[in-house]
Length: 394
Ligand code: PEP
Ligand code: MN
Image (cartoon, rainbow, N blue to C red; front, top):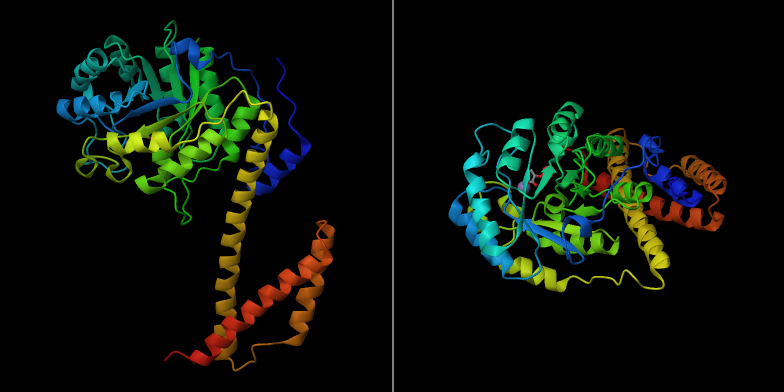
């Protein structure tokens, strides 16, 4: 099936959002993925698919208690737990290792939940298959490395098991697609992508910024590929998980992976972002699941996607404004230190003229640009005046 046509305005918007990596956005896929819907790998799966469990399996007690708590909610289908934890620094908790397979076995028989673990090497795959794990996932730190992904793919040749691939740590959609392709070429058709956000050195309210346009792009290129959102790793703290989870559902994502721990404060990894099973229940009850068969689905999907892009643009605009004001502070200090007046008529006239010309080229209304410039200038003058009045630091 040919790739669906991408509306030109969406292309333009995404290029605008990603001026530095326009070639990475809406890249034409080299191959179509041959994937099966979630209903083929989890019989009777409800929408959205909920995957939950601790960041890491720590003790048998912690695993069983957490699993019992989330199974009692009646909304979770899959129990997750990291057995080998990829840690940034050595000498941190690196997972309980293969002894935890027996704990997961107990989870399965006692609660009926399916189980999933993270695999990063061929050996992990071999052990997970040997111990009857139902679903595998590849972590963000592994997706970045084509050698590792290929090694996992080779180990899975001839095996019929679902595999979920987290996005790579950095915002490179090609690496994400490449990992999915490697698995698909090895014969894995029960494939899903997990969106867990992207590393940024900017100060944001997220642990990993969502960059929603990237999973939207993935979905646009591969409409049949289920995408699951991991709000826990996007947020890095419990307070904001609900909003991100709701946004993921509003974008029609197929499911959510949310970390839970029977005693989050005592968790050996990702303590700040794990919910108790009880809190997970409250969160899941609060989510609004849109009717996917609505007559207006195409319209609402499009609207939601556009709004998400607008949110991102606004965030960028606010950051840019903050940067401009930092510069203004420096200009103010420089003028003060050199005994120069805050206001210079020529500079202001030049700003107004050039910005209005730029705005016209961009198709913006002339008066609108003028008003924005006046507002910026007013604030710049206010700041510089304040700086001048403070006086020269000793
Ligand atoms: C995890 O799911 O616990 C994990 C290590 O996540 P990520 O690969 O997204 O960092
Ligand atoms: Mn984690």
